[in-house]
Image (cartoon, rainbow, N blue to C red; front, side):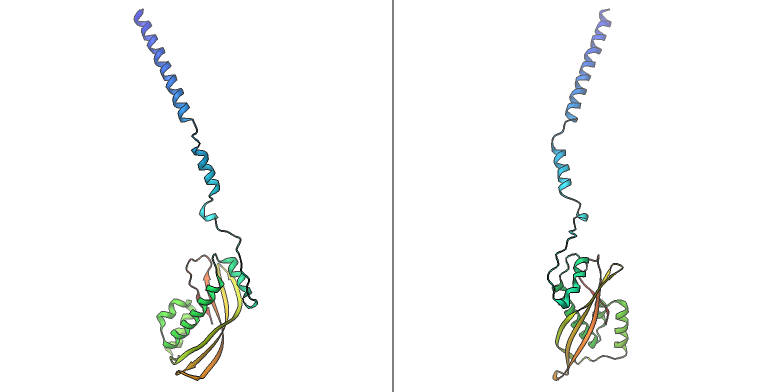
Length: 196
């Protein structure tokens, strides 16, 4: 019977060791280190980037003839009217010069498809005058700003003076209203001429 008692004694010892190991594992694995809490707190402090866009836009004081640009500030992230207006003036001058010289490649990058077609037809029919140059160019004001189907359109009243053959006595004054458009969600800073 001594042999049987030893087996029973061994089983009791192994069972005690197993209980002790399970208890130790549970106490170690089940313990919080404090790291989990800091991760949770950090997750609450730092919202996902997609939701971090500030909906409250600061709109600067705008002159009466540019006040309609508030709509652009409300719809386009990081919109700056000064940058936009400078870009519009540059685009106007570039488009007129490219048209007068018949430079279709330049025009294609700056116009919507429909406007490009009408410019292309005028160039092909030789309805251009490469001798015209700019004397002055000013923006009179913003005629309209509209948002439709995710596209914003801004209509600008331009006043330009152009002359021919380097002769300033031939200066003529022109009034034009051009509309530039852009997809609101587009990260591309460029606007396209969609109407003249």
